[in-house]
Length: 232
Image (cartoon, rainbow, N blue to C red; front, side):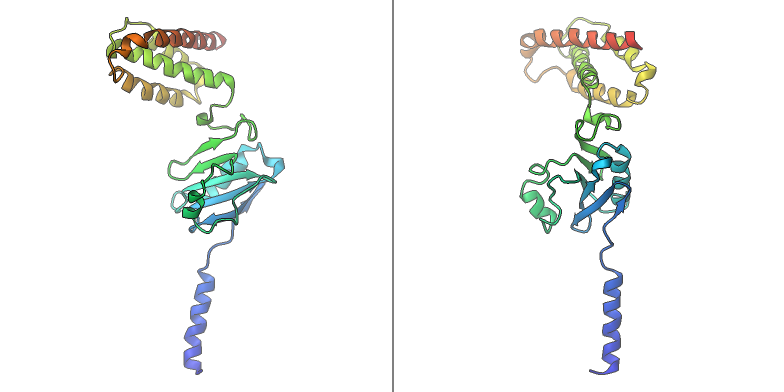
């Protein structure tokens, strides 16, 4: 084979090496163990010592799942936990075999929404948990209360129920300094429930049949918010 032919071949090989997939990422307390389809699906192992270090999860997600990447999801597994890393050749095969379900990742970060959609409150902890995880009985109760009162307020229009001071109670709760970090999340939860509720149930007859439960839920919700307001 002539030198004229060998030279272009060598150049092509060097280009392939240079343009190959980047090495798997790693950082303090975490390492990327595999990726599928060029990084659309990613698997990360968290050191046991950093299992409840929210910063490790966030930094891994930010480094792997940049806004300009093709990243769809990052799944997190604590060291020693069974992981799908190295077991699937593509995301279609991965999701065809149940996706995340059989593996139970302790956290999953969604690249499109830039947020964690899964967070194991027990294994990863409550301190750095995203609002959507609703970690802790108090936060869960307050979130449920917002939904219950949004439904009750909506039904004053949708079902003609008597007016209450529930909206004022909600606003008083949201104004608490202790709720500053969660205020937007709570307000969105309220609005998302209120909007469809103000049209009433699909079956108008449920305005009567479901009212006792709606009223009971609202009474419990008022007690939850008043307790929080009293505590400040």
